Image (cartoon, rainbow, N blue to C red; front, side, top):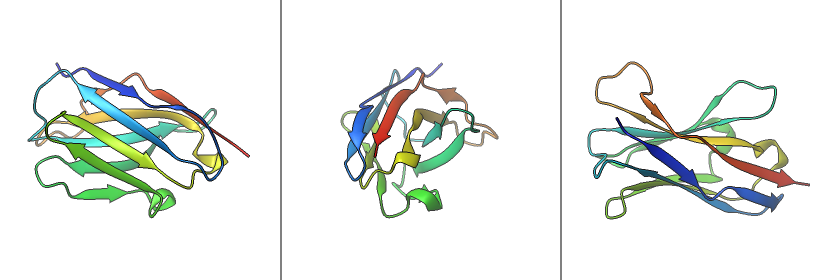
Length: 119
């Protein structure tokens, strides 16, 4: 079983930046899709960004395009989310997730890290 741990959350003013990181117990994510999701109070969990580990190809939710960047570090075996130009509506708990090859669901989830953006 893959164990995921997020870090880097915190409090920031609107227009500021934060960088989130996701580390896993397994040494390699080569066959995996890795993703970031978020959930605000009273709202459903939503997709933020996804990256194919083997190719580095990424996909973003329209709401974060041009502001957020997902990346992977082959040496550290981490997946990062660089968040720029943050808005109050970005406030949420951010979760890291992993999907095995051919899986129909996201198999593994971290416990989340809080991101709060003030006006």
